[in-house]
Length: 101
Image (tube, rainbow, N blue to C red; front, top):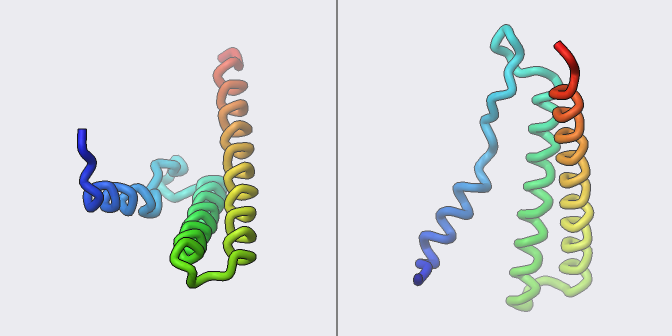
């Protein structure tokens, strides 16, 4: 199966669009927790985009190698934080599901 590079780029760009989640309070407004999570994820995505830009600049030879390494390190730390938060959210959800009614 061949992958068209334009389709791949379009799909990647679409996946990076801001999330319009369904985390709403009972009155229809977004909860503070939902806003916190959304801002955290948006910040993580921005950091990852910046590191990708720096890495591509490094490959093109337009960005200093030190900047590339720093950006990749930030992206790695951000990804680890996102995974840790995801794990905590999943654990919290599982605890709630175990509670008797």
